[in-house]
Amino acid sequence: MRRREEISAGLLAFRRRDTIEVLLAHPGGPFWAKKDDGAWTIPKGLAEPGDDLLATARREFTEETNLTAASGFTMLTPVRQKSGKMVHAWAFAADFDLAAFVSNTFEIEWPPRSGRRQRFPEIDRIAYFALPAAMSKIIAYQRPLLRELERRLG
Image: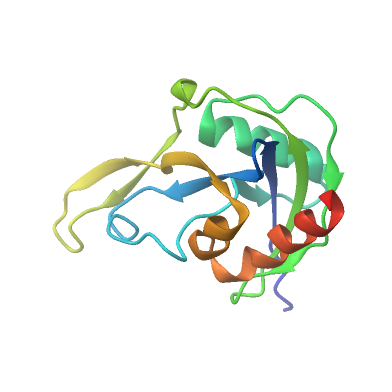
């Protein structure tokens, strides 16, 4: 039996200040707590078979940030995670007030094998980064998304 290919969809918000800045999200939970460079991501989530990928990206963006992406989406070239999962992304211009940030949560057994379950935010913080800083912050397989955005924006 062939395993279906997993697909995620996400949004890459950007704004123009003195330079181009992108909005990245830091994963919540104990595994990511002490990781910084190479740990940040675009807000994204799993798409079910047959889902509209842009609708999924918009929904996941709102669930993970409490912010609403309105319009003006530009599709970027999909990237593949090490696991094989394809990530489809769209860029859009937005200068959000990050004070409105709130993320949904997930529950896991923590500490492992303790029998205790704890809730953690899916995303524990978000921030805008200038592209050079974003390149070091973002998870490696998503760097092509930043390079493509930079090329497109000139």
